[in-house]
Length: 367
Ligand SMILES: *Cc1c(COP(=O)(O)O)cnc(C)c1O
Image (cartoon, rainbow, N blue to C red):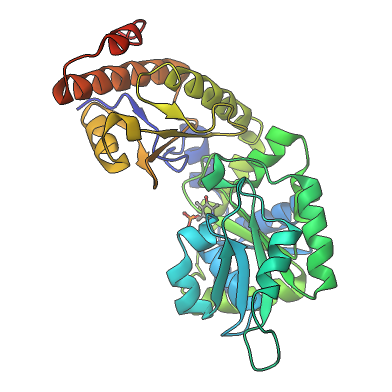
């Protein structure tokens, strides 16, 4: 089957030839001995870009988050976050097993965890010495589960001031921090200044095949290095991978704007399809979520049917399907993909029930 567009995630980019050439020629050494010049160069670069004392190259964003949690907390501590953030939505089991912390979450309307949310969660339980201590707040930027919105700088600043007043640490999961920066014009360092530790990912829209970096104070990074080793994430000649990440930082940050424009375009195309309702018609970055409930299909059924027609999508919860733009999809592919989805929805409806007159009218334009 021919793939029309792979919209499952922005992790689906493959390294291009210039990136592969840089990887092939990268100077390397054993990073476990601190002797890989490409890894060192990447760590210095990321620390500087984010305005932090030090950075540590990590195999994945998940490991960055899990190591950060481990360093900031004691087993049994409470971590306050939003239900839809990656740390809660995809990593709750890891949080329980590795750092052995309890997540205390709230679902916000817009994905932004605010001071009043954190206050409410702290006040929701007894906090004496005999009970769970909240020691860490985690936020995310961009907020993936809420349509890739930017966590606004003033909200992050307010939260940082509150957290410091309460002696709570803040970790920023910045897997798409550069998307936030490009979309808002706020520098990555300004966002990072609101947090004690920050993780960024190179294998999302930046297009590298691998890796993440965790940043913070030198003391924090020294501890993080210990847990990276414990968790099996200390690598040897990883400079080839660090070189790809450096290349991505040099060449692919500004390009993220193209992904954001393409997401706008995709949202517009999807909104013309029958029985599909776009949840974020004005995407700020590279996510489009759409509701397929009216087709009578579950997100999984819808995505499976679309995959058979060459359009790859990510089934989400509550009737939602996710589509993401990245360097591997062009506007032409998006047009073809939406045409295919339109045909698919009409076929589904024809199989379910005889056409109602209203259905015929909204079919025009997509054939
Ligand atoms: C992708 C992602 C991660 C995890 O990154 P991996 O490298 O896939 O482990 C963490 N947080 C957010 C917000 C992400 O989108």
